[in-house]
Image (cartoon, rainbow, N blue to C red):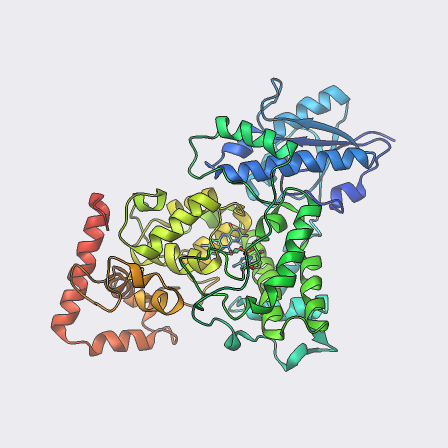
Amino acid sequence: MVSRLILVLGDQLTETLSALVAGDKACDVVLMAEVRDEARYVRHHPKKIALIFSAMRKFATRLQTQGWAVRYTCYDDVENAGSIGGELLRRASEGGQSAVLVTQPAEWRLINALQDVPLHVEMLNDDRFIASPADFETWAAGRKSLRMEYFYRDMRRRTGLLMEGDKPAGGQWNFDHENRKPAPDSIAFSGPMQFEPDAVVSQVLMFVETEFCDHFGDLHPFWFATDRDQALCALGHFMAHALPRFGDFQDAMLIENRFLYHAVISPYLNIGLLTPLEVCRAAEAEWQAGHAPINAVEGFIRQIIGWREYVRGIYFMQGPEYTARNALGHKRPLPALYWGGETKMSCVAHAVTQTREEAYAHHIQRLMVTGNFALIAGIDPTALHEWYLQVYIDAFEWVEAPNTLGMSQFADGGIIASKPYVSSGAYINRMSNHCKSCHYSVAQKTGPGACPFNPLYWHFLLRHRDRFAKNPRMGNMYRTWDRMDEDRRKAVLQDADRVLAALDSGAVV
Ligand SMILES: Cc1cc2nc3c(=O)[nH]c(=O)nc-3n(C[C@H](O)[C@H](O)[C@H](O)COP(=O)(O)OP(=O)(O)OC[C@H]3O[C@@H](n4cnc5c(N)ncnc54)[C@H](O)[C@@H]3O)c2cc1C
Ligand code: SF4
């Protein structure tokens, strides 16, 4: 048999990866490489680099113990070619291979880079996902609107998850009306399972500390799972202690509790330590055993076989140009407060501090605090996209870009979101305890002490009236505005201009 190189990327750390299944231990050679191009295409949070390098090193060892020949390139190896393509060529010339087997990379950047490599590169479908890009296109063909809910139902039918015959378990597809309660006074979950760095992780941490010390984010304490066994423990911990309350407080935010009942498994899913189907089957088993209610389990499964699969489908269907979309023409530079610059807005300050320290914020912090503020303030969506890609441990373009540009910023013109996710301070006040200790008053609509979300919300709606006034889900908002008295409307818009001018001048907002 002729030897091939099997390329395993840093987000492909799954033993059942299609390229490994199709490979032959007797003659093929696995190539894994920590390369400059991947570590530096944006200034990733140091925790993210530490997670990926640690997990790659441990995965390589695991493959070796299973009998694979592995060529592993560390970041500081003197011969490191600095790019995936360069490493393929270097290892191919060492080993005499001319063919490469790889599971299709998750991002256009790497797919394109591999197409330029002068070797015979065979790309296999990434069957860790339930729907392939081709499946998604088939589902999308001929549809006027691509709402996630209908795609999700198809995924339920296809996987059989929470199905009783051809009917949804519990008689409904979606139990969201029972979810999304305001923040409770206290949380009974101690948070995600944390792990002491072992020898491999400690070595990576020392290296990341010196090499990437200028990137935004705290490296220590580092407690993430870095191999499959640990990731399975973290998953089991969530299933046993948090899943039953997952749905209830999915959208809540609490200053004292950064994780509430969230799973914090996206980093493990996104690099392959866990697979979506096994995670969903584990949740379904909790419901079948009577340990977790249907609203929690359905809500959780929907995030994974619904939203996660759906955004990947959109990413591939829309092509590499998706990340340049700016349907609303927003151009304001990203204010310094996103990098930890001073702000008097308690909700934003906490979301950014938490992001710096944990490389994690949950969905509503991303969508309704940092995302919402950027949208109503008219921030350039590309700058915001780069921020999200840099600062979160689970950020990979295929999942981050549709969430940021599509769901959060309406930059794709409404492919993902049927209306923009904008709100005044009232929503944040209802779902969190941030406003109680904020410099600003959420109840105040105008004046220097008013919550900046309040005037900016109206300013956004008026800036884009032509686009949104006819949206059936937004007509009420415009009618409310039109009913306001003239002086109040003037004061609101003047306030919004004042806040925007302060952002532009670098003053503290
Ligand atoms: C602006 C913005 C940017 C985002 N960027 C990313 C990103 O870079 N990477 C990422 O994995 N998720 C991203 N999300 C989605 C979501 O916020 C995270 O998946 C979630 O916060 C991860 O934390 P968790 O594991 O505790 O999730 P939980 O709330 O416990 O949910 C369970 C799982 O469901 C999946 N999930 C939930 N919502 C989504 C979603 N909207 N899209 C895809 N999967 C979802 C995740 O795999 C998650 O682990 C983003 C959302 C927004 C609004
Ligand atoms: S008052 Fe406004 S800025 Fe302050 S925490 Fe509440 S929503 Fe955020």
